[in-house]
Amino acid sequence: MTEVNQDTILKVEDLAVHFPVGGGLLGGPRRFVHAVDGVDLELKRGECLGLVGESGCGKSTLALSILGLQKPTRGRIVVNGHDIADDSVGRMTRARTTQMVFQDPYSSLNPRQTVRKTLEAPLRLHGFNAKSEIDDRIVDMLRHVGLRADVAKRFPHEFSGGQRQRIGIARALILRPQIVVLDEPVSALDVSIRAQIINLLLELKETLSLSYIMISHDLGVVEHMSDKVAVMYLGRIVETGNWKTIFSTPRHPYTRALIEAIPDPFKQSRGMKIVGEIPNPLNPPAGCGFNPRCPEARDLCRVPPTPDLEAIGADHLVRCRRVHEISAGKLTAP
Amino acid sequence: MKFRANLLIGGALFGLVVIAGLFAPLLAHTDPVMGANLMNAELPPDTEFWFGTDAQGRDIYSRVLHGARISLTVGIVSQLINTVIGVCLGLSAGYWGGWWDDFVSGLTNLMLAIPSLIFALAIMAILNPGLTSLLIALGLTNWSFTCRLARASALSLKSQGYVQAAKVLGYSDVRIMLTQLLPNMLGPIIVIGTLGMGGAVLAEASLSFLGLGIRPPYPSWGSMLSDARDQITTAPWISIFPGLAIFVTVLGLNLLGDGLRDILDPQSRTRRA
Image (tube, rainbow over all chains, first blue to last red; front, side, top):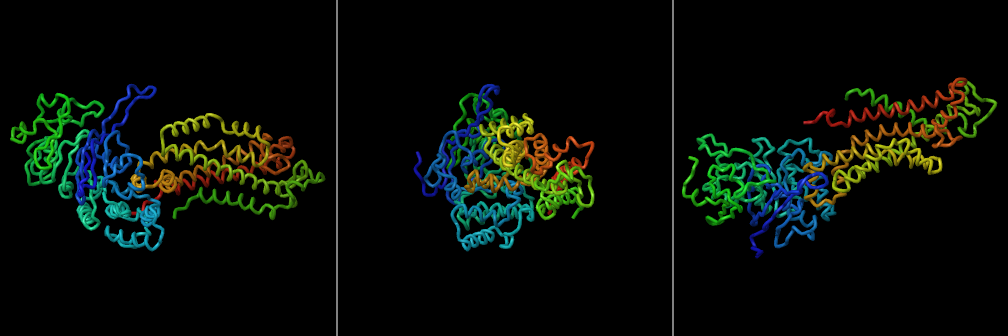
């Protein structure tokens, strides 16, 4: 099942993460939250995969599993042909392959460490001892992220949000990883700074030949950065494809609603809205997980089991029973 | 910089005690143990005996100076032991969670439920009275507050992005605790440690007063008070001066702890933009 394509750097197969809830002495029956439930993903070398979905859909849990911070319940995570979900791959090997840029630049830097210390400690940990080599790497990396070499002796509180995020990016890249998980990398920044950081990330992807997994609920950012997009809902991927396909011909009602929700001053809203809350993952709806909120839902959507991902075009997969009717334009909503 | 009265006064009082302890052999007029002379028994304070003499005719001034050494040793060493135990247990419990956290929290609650002085008394009753046993007894009985504080700090800090980042960078758990968590919780722990030192000085005095601490003739403030019990109406200076020394030390340490808290508390610190 895992023939390794030369271009494929990361392959996630049937990944599931279930969290136990309750149980114990007085906790009532022990149940499981299916935070991630059978996700397949493929990341090609040099690509940026946008992972989209609202809060609680499991995208962060998925990212933590890829980083090795969350042990999966089942499934495989194959990086460069090696399954990293099993414990034989240590933290150190993983650290040199996969890194992460965090959402909040204020809490993601240790307030008691200078920039130099923040960048130097991981290098020393990974066996770099020569001072000249460490210095070279730090100066080089600071230049890559657009900071002057003399910032190294300063503490995080002396920097602005945008500068802090640059330091966070430098820390993620200092070990020269191949895959970088970007967890909402610009959502905590001022709008005026966002474009700078996005452009920096795109530039670094080329110069350092990186592959990105970008988690975001901001489709505007995803549209600008991603080559491929995967839309998650209730722990499952509901639609995936090239960004062009997803943004020009979205097929799943949830994706359509998300794209409708991108603010556009020149466009009249067509009124496609999602109402209600994300369902309780302890008690997911029967059939399609989106059916209680879906304007297109019919009786067949409420019948178990969960619909399968269906290929409707080149690299375009949709998890919806009515996808052909919807493609043909038979919509309830105007 | 803002004038900080409690830090300044506390520091001055504690500094006075430290100087007294450090230079006791130079500042004292007579040997605190061997300087007994029954001819001088129970003399009130005068120009020769600044604090008067006790029932054995020993110079109370010299004994109070030497007592500072014992009180400081007990305060600092026992509090260091407490801090190390409390930080190790609390930090690892907060960071790791699970059964280890349950175990440590249970142990902490157990320790808090037993009056620490009674517990120290029990330990002293088993061990031979003396300075080392006193350090062990007080060092093993007062770590619960430090432990709770370290656990709470670890719980709140471990979800910070930089701790996650350290994990992703391949840091081991122990390295994360020492380099990422500990430096960021040190402020409150120093404050608790300083305040606890005052408590340890008092506990030493109490144990020595009860005869389970430093044994006579060595000049501990507590045992001096204990000796002075019978003469408290006829020769009050014998008990006043050791009592005053305890008072000054504990007050100084408490003010110092308060002052340090004001400085180290992030909310009172002005944030540089």
